[in-house]
Length: 445
Image (cartoon, rainbow, N blue to C red; front, side):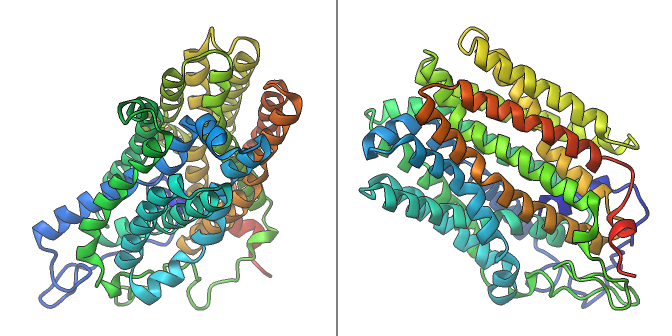
């Protein structure tokens, strides 16, 4: 869904322009009726930032303490691999329910419930008492993340139509900050709390609880739900759920080779990202790097996405084809994995930086979603297809890494797998970056 927002900034091909009519007396300009009051707008900005901060700590805090969790719960390497596969599975399964829930209950109510689910899941999972209960509580938190992740861009577009770029940048920076902070401070915070891994994981529930409070003010904004916004007078606009306007040619997205290339590219980059978040600290710790430093190394990898998420989309839109960027990211990843294999401790900071660059395939994928479709409906349909298919593709990767680690007794085979997946990722990324649109390939005759 972030691709829907990226498309507003990155589309360079002709598209249907959505015009917002000038406000007039009696015109509703914000959810809740009437012109938005200043305090309400400022409160929503705070709510968006707090929500974004909560969209990754459930994952990266666990990665920093994975060894302690495995020992405490008696997990095998295969089960730990399953645990690192849970996030993309939940994103694929629960994310698709978000628009329907928003239409029924309102977007603000669903995000508020999502923050509550995150807090509840994070609070109970360390004390669940067994592996199955730990997985169930983790799934609860990830369910809240999934629906919130899908609906946040909708809220930004609805409330800040003239500031989509700046608000999306703020949201993206907060998301990256939450990701990196949880990776960096979970281990030292655990030490401060007495060295108990349960406390080190449960403390992140407080951040989610804080995010619930500002969203309570938007629970009753039922008219804010996607697909319920009326188009401007005299203007035909595709629905927020991606349905094409009446009379438009049918777009059969599965007929498009570009759509499939983007879906596979998205899935393989997501595989790399979740393997990195779930396993990279353990790789460094097994190489003799202290636990706190291993968490900082993951934070460095994650925080690289903050500046590059602004640079890469701008560069991508200036190029007719995005293949050169795909190649550069692929080379960075291959060098980083080679370093992890040959000298994981000696060059740890350099490998973390290079893998952070490689992980910026995510904003590139979102940018290409916006560039590979001409219409708003095409962007919505391509984004939904690429992300849902991509998250399904990414599920086996972290699990397979855990299985290989357990049965080989080392990181040689898992790192070889990570490096090997970069080859098809680069190939399909180059194909997805060609100057063409899904409408040209997938419009039914």
